[in-house]
Length: 160
Ligand code: 5GP
Ligand code: ZN
Image (cartoon, rainbow, N blue to C red; front, top):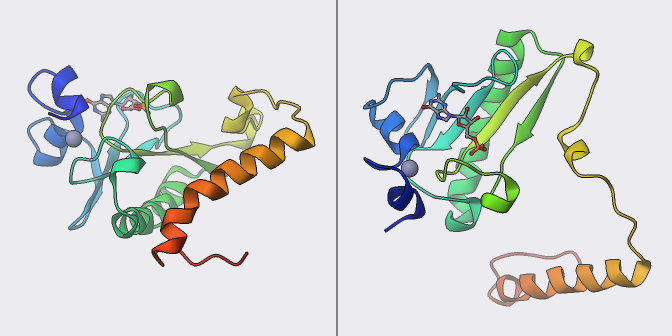
């Protein structure tokens, strides 16, 4: 049983939005993707882009499907920017409780941004941390190590 089905009575909220069981302000739909206005918009035009198929997080979805999803994100982002008259647009995509994900159906927030709100980047929610060179090296090598299986299987081509 998926995480969202355990927690949400009646099944996953966003799956129910895709099926039309729960109404939404739909702005875009194709074979794989669905986009609709957020019910609690952080700014006018705040839109959520989701895969129609249920995946809890980015880690549950294959690279090809992620690619398709982000093609639609680009398409919808252009329309949201123009339709809302925004000066900029933030993409936010949270995975897991620790990252602040509340609805466990993978979603990408498209949030129109305006100069008069005093530009604040989403990165500002966490203060930058000073890290010694050794720690940075250790982290870089831990991350590269985890990419090794994909490199060895030829799934990913590395330039280094
Ligand atoms: P998260 O915090 O998981 O990244 O974002 C979930 C988003 O879904 C929130 O911004 C919230 O306002 C939105 N949301 C929650 N329930 C509904 C709903 O029933 N309809 C719509 N359109 N948005 C919803
Ligand atoms: Zn779902």
